[in-house]
Length: 389
Ligand SMILES: *Cc1c(COP(=O)(O)O)cnc(C)c1O
View 1 (cartoon, helix red, strand yellow):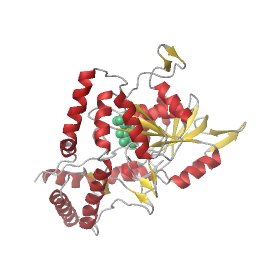
View 2: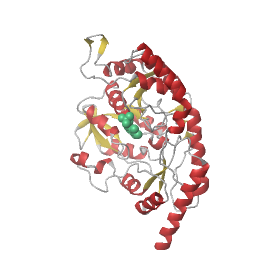
View 3: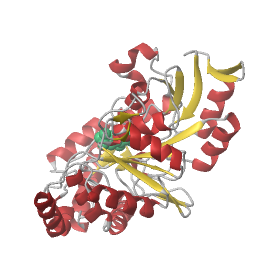
View 4: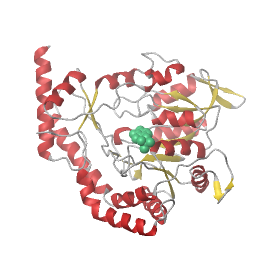
């Protein structure tokens, strides 16, 4: 049996006719940019998240950059994020003209560790002329950018308390967390603004590139709306030069509206699959994903930690099981960020997770038989490792 790491076709069969109808209408109308389907999806997605505003953009990376700019991040600022995330989180910070500072992750949820954020703010920053300044980067610390990684919400109560105490803006990277919750609050509602990606493989995915910013603030929504569209308030009247073209494609808005109606069901399917994994893998020499009290994990990825990860991965590949690594190299050790001056040992939790993480197949239409094949193959690989050592 072959089990792919990801297979989107089951989802697309469910929405195919709705999307084909919507696309046919769009071709008939031939209004491809900023058509009514965009505003329709924005309204539906805002309602789903429980926020007043959603602003559709071209990708999750655009959403992050524009969210940072819209909350006021600018050149000379420092934005605090984590070294264990997709690189887009940090790219957005530097694209907004700011510098990135890293705080390590919590070893159980893989999201920003509030205790370490507090230590960073108290020990690595100083107050000069009433401004909080990062001693290393000599920039003004203005914003935190935690990530709801793998589909589990960050520890928002603690992070928001610290942000409030230090007067920091908060942008939430919710690119992996559509529908994730803490109590009754959804991902996308915790910061001043949040960024979502609708990359095809995300829990809510387009058939191409797309993203959105959510916010409770009319002013931030208006600013984001300007930044995605050349700073235009009306045609050829430009009120800011910091913008560009980052609009949500209308064809993608049609796809997203159709798929949004199924998101809750697909997230429930992911949670059921996570339960099958947990039932079969508990007791094995693995670290399984944790769902904190009050949290609803939406398992964008099902990531375990395992010793001899690369050998185990090779065995799974031989058994026809596709896996992924999220992520194999922490950002502070990437060549791209060598100039940040970090070395191995600076963020030990991120370093240990990158060495041991293994993402197992996870998508809503994965069957119990497929999960059985994955877990049986994984247990066999672990047994083989144990015998060898
Ligand atoms: C996918 C992702 C992004 C970027 O989204 P794109 O739509 O690919 O630009 C940013 N941050 C995280 C955590 C992601 O998973």
